[in-house]
Image (cartoon, rainbow, N blue to C red; front, side, top):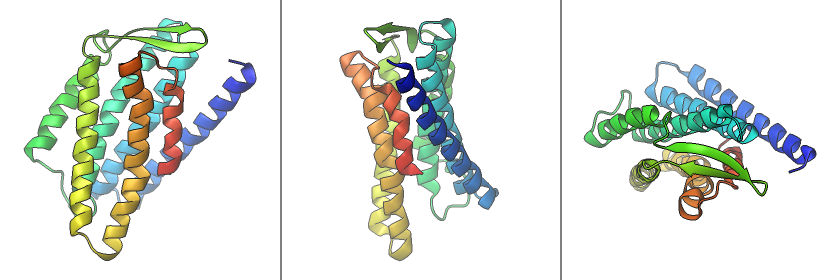
Length: 216
């Protein structure tokens, strides 16, 4: 990969990260007391951390620091999807944190995976082969993938149910959320989770964070 290509990718990613972090702060400070604002802010901050982990992991792929950052990306990915579940559960009217069984179970799994993601059980090593990133995954990587898809699937189910029962402006807001958050989220999981899981290559992981442009 040429220096110009690397510079261009890095510049675009920095712009996306900056805008996503700005969006998190903007929403949070609109009304810090509301759980819906808090959940979205955590989601966007974690997404920024995930982007940073991906970027730094690719940049330093052949060193120990690259492995560290790739593991951080997994920690942030788990937090991002769990925050997404919380956000869709309480948007737009709920005033408190949801305490149903599904949310609590996913929260326990998210906390466990946040710890496990820092170990070789999820990611073992990074390598650059023929100009592409090759990640060696640990035995619990499929379980991590299952958790991510469970969170996205549950969020999608919640959103569809709310769209069916909503009316007027609220229904329109929910549709925008579907297009702006879940669609790029699904695309990012294809490039950063499904392709590595099915084909054993992380060559396309660098493009996952760019789908955040749609959210912004």
